[in-house]
Image 1: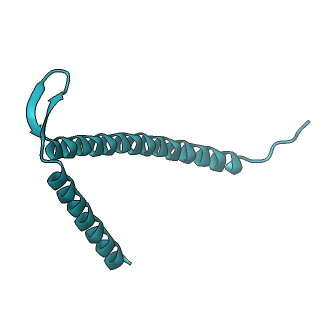
Image 2 (image 1 turned 45 degrees about the vertical axis):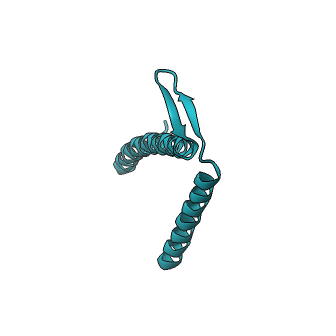
Image 3 (image 1 turned 60 degrees about the vertical axis):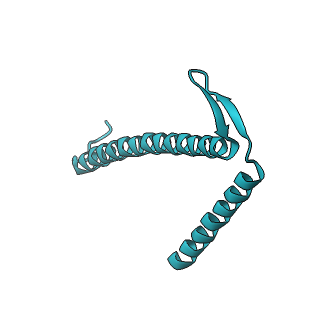
Amino acid sequence: MATLRRIVFAVFVLLFMLLAAVFAYNNPQPIDVDIGLVRLEQVPMSIAFAGVFAFGWLFGLISAGLALLRSSGEKRRLRKELKYAESELSTLRALPPQDAH
């Protein structure tokens, strides 16, 4: 299964590289990119596209990482609460029965 996953990943990477090469070949003209703080002039369109794609990928990776960190913290907190509840329950079960008079 891991080998099939690696093969599919390698094919995906090669296909993406081929599409990027075709895009770069079909769009050789330079463009001006205004980021807000900086204005970049005469940047090849393929480089600008790759930069925006990489920035978006990095932003998504950071967002997913923060969500996973938050989720693991919540999971840790719930485990602590479960241990506390289990110990309290075992303490209550160990008490002698009392009459309801």
